[in-house]
Length: 500
Image (cartoon, rainbow, N blue to C red; front, side):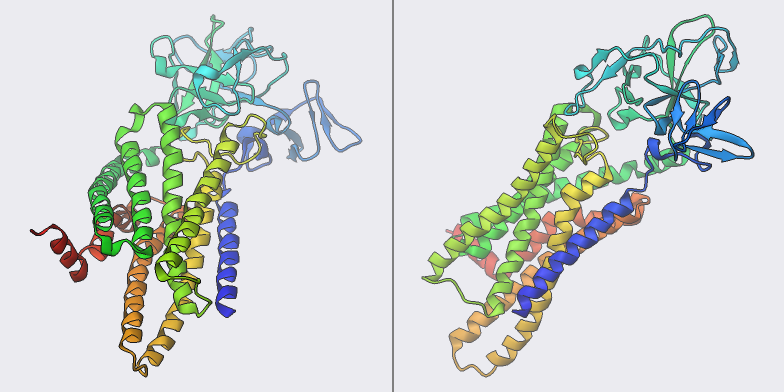
């Protein structure tokens, strides 16, 4: 039928459109791909080398395959990070820091060839400093970049002897692991290593953050507090909606049970998000990862239950074969099927996320959630799209299509109903029409605000720009309570249930 084809087309479009987001968001160029005239800070001048018959460039220290070196003004520049793991030295070769300053001076000693710095190996399924393992590497394990990459933002000296939070750990891939969860890893554009003249200790210099971004973060600090407050306000309204539908027998139908599951999912998600927003650095790593999985599962479950409600009203007006048996028995069977779908799919996605996160056999090149690294959520945009926005985008597209086709069917039903003589037929049609209007409002509340969330995710920019949609998202508990509880019929049932 045309309706089924439309829904399937919407799902396909949703998958394609959301996958495009992955391509758009993969905008950050990896360190190994930063090669060429555009990236002079990731190149070194090559002397006394020659090109081999395979198109590579051979030097005493390293052979650069084709594509990992470039030429300009008669000189040849190599990209060592494109060949193997690399680190960054703050000063030029045969230089180090003048004592008590960060000025580079000539020196006859070198602690970089071989590197006199402890190197660590990190299990792929762990983000905890405690799980790091000291290892020995070959003298030529790292290639070396030279010079400060911080630019106008400047850099500061890490002092682990005085401050525990300043401890850093050089990983075998050349990244630096820190004690700061918000900046757990520093790549070669965010740190450099150097020793002070007369000392054999190699120190870590870290780049200051972009000053413009720091100003924006300070301005947006109150925004995070506002959004956390909105979530806290929503929680009692979610709970009130759930209790009203749980305590009134007249609302214990398929519609009521589906709404209860939807509301319960959102309530748990909002509680966890509020904890994350308020707790911030006080949350342990394990608790942070646990909260991330709960938020992922519950938000996905809320969208799958919304999809169930959209599908159910679409089914009613589609003219497809209704289930056999009594209405109560049919609704019970449908609820079991809906529950298996709406709880099972988020659970399946969460299981896949957990496997990708914790299974050591998964290669590091695969997209992993990496919960708890930068925050209590996905670390990278790719993972956020793949494990969260992709299923949400597909569901939103499917819901839009089902509502569109249902609206057309509803218009046709309305014309036919006017000619019906049966009072029961007209009453049944009016009830279904009211239910459609309620679901439409619910979809607008969730669908439109989350479409804005997707747009803000792709476009980026300051959170102040998207403040209106974010506030609507945080106040969904209040909006759902007003739509589904503050109705004359529901209020009358509440009075009859609790009045003496």
